Image (cartoon, rainbow, N blue to C red; front, side, top):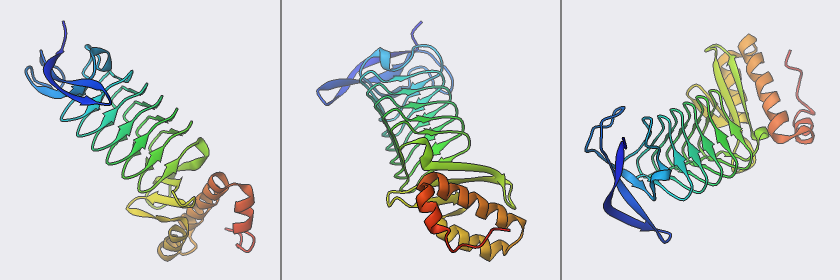
Length: 237
């Protein structure tokens, strides 16, 4: 039995007709008779499982949404993209190309995931962040602000470390520098080091955070740039 149908209501995008969907039965948190978002065809949204497209979200092209995934708000999923598992794509986010978003991943705000990128696990991509190319963002990574991650070397997730025993994410920003997300802190890697010194002095936690920052600079900026940065830097211990 089908769980939804295409209604007569439609919009036109890029020469395609996208039809508003309507639930035929209750499933997951969706009630029978509830109107959803827009799809081009039934292939875009699985008729089994609890996946749903809601609000004014759009799924079209060869894109597919299945499992228990949700696409909502004004989000768009298109091209050959796949959104599945318990993933969520919402806000004004875009997932396209051959991108995959799955697991418990979240893509929202004005974030973009495209190319052959993969976002999965408990990862979050938000704000104006861009994840593309062959990049994989996974685990508990949080990529946001003006991040640009185009391959696996553009971000580093380290944890659990520090006084909070939590995860810290280092990622390349649009200025080709490094932005750090650690608890409620968000700033450049230089600001992060200064905050660490101000908060922890030279204790064990400070040494761990600074070692993590060193690793991030080596991976994200490369060996030559790392050596230049550390020419006059004292040893961490």
